[in-house]
Image (tube, rainbow, N blue to C red; front, side, top):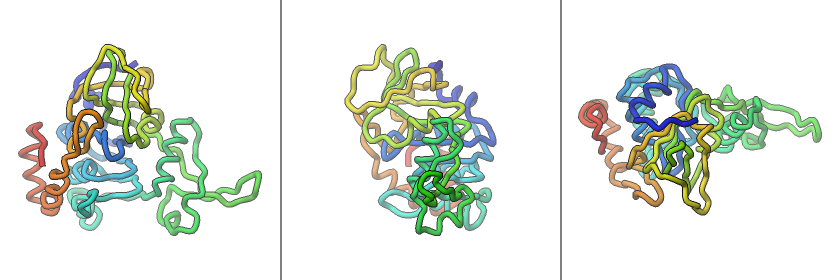
Length: 272
């Protein structure tokens, strides 16, 4: 059953050095506040999984928290490259970064397999591409019914998944809506899970298209208003486009990035 706790306490308990960590959320509901707390607590040697590593993982990589990235696309949306990501790959700064690249479909199916309790997923997604030859996480299987050659990817079962949502009730049931990605599957596939929310309510009112994560699949809930900033939370906040634009200059330069860490993340006041 989910415990209602603080973000620092939840990260201290649930996110451990060497973990496979998934922080999911597509376009909005990206758990930036939780990522910054992981940086503040100086977690390291993480294998970070995410379908679209954008600024949130650029920051974790630049802070030296990540040794391996499992992903399907990486970039600063609407702006360009992730410079801390690139520096780690090209120059090993601040630590060398190992890569395991997949397609979006491959990553989504890996989470679904983990959530379903099966060892792998089967899809056609890699056919005709060279990606399988560059990723250790892709194999080929023969369909026992048709003889067709298909791609297989292993289940992705994070040690801990972190997501952001709109609200939770006092029993720890979580409700999220809007554009949803693989948050549900990533939580169900994980050994431990943390959800940050905008608000705590007495009961969850009906919401069209909402996903509800029941309390028994969540370990901890932390109330963190604005916890998705600079991404947005539908119904609560807007996307901070200026932050994404400002990040390009900050992340290009190691010294500027180090100042950002010292002056904002480690003080707990994060703004680009």
